Amino acid sequence: MFTGLITDIGEIVAREAGNDIVRLAIACHYPADEIALGASIACAGVCLTVVSLETPADGRTVFWVDAAPETLAVSTAVGWQVGRRLNLERSLRIGDELGGHLVLGHVDGVATVDMRTEIGDAARFDLSCAPELARFVAAKGSVALDGTSLTVNSVAGNAFSVLLIPHSLSVTTWGTCRAGERVNIEVDMMARYAARLAEARGLG
Image (tube, rainbow, N blue to C red; front, side):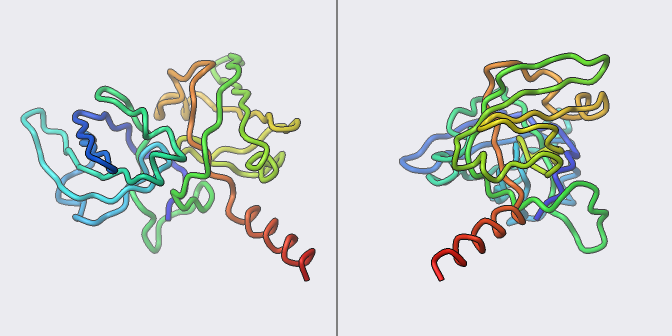
């Protein structure tokens, strides 16, 4: 489980494609001795398991993860190549501050950035997603985009907007994000369960 508060920006330094699984090496600034094999790290919002660790000459920690078929089917991971920068967050520990919202790292799909508007040093992003996901997005509610916990400003159909403050732009990949880019979206799990309960009442 995660909070949607990004703690590092990683870089893909190697990619190995197998029959069904893509293995990725991601360089980061986390100390190697603080990452255990089998640990979960959210990479652009996708919860991935550390399967190997190494420390190359440049001093950065490199961890390897496997992206399975389901991950490749529903997220932007299918197109990740060497050089790609990723928002990173290590899993939440008991006692950690919950500054964002509860994020599972189970990406629901992909949203498209339709427009970026500069508002002083901040930036507003207008995005759109599939209708089956848009129904879970509510104004003033939470959404995780590329792993970043954000508050929804407005909603119109399958379009919605978020605003990122200067700090968020500087410590995430959103600083370089432009119109046309695709980002991973995870809807708020409380909205998902509320919708399911409403469906169950209708069936009952």
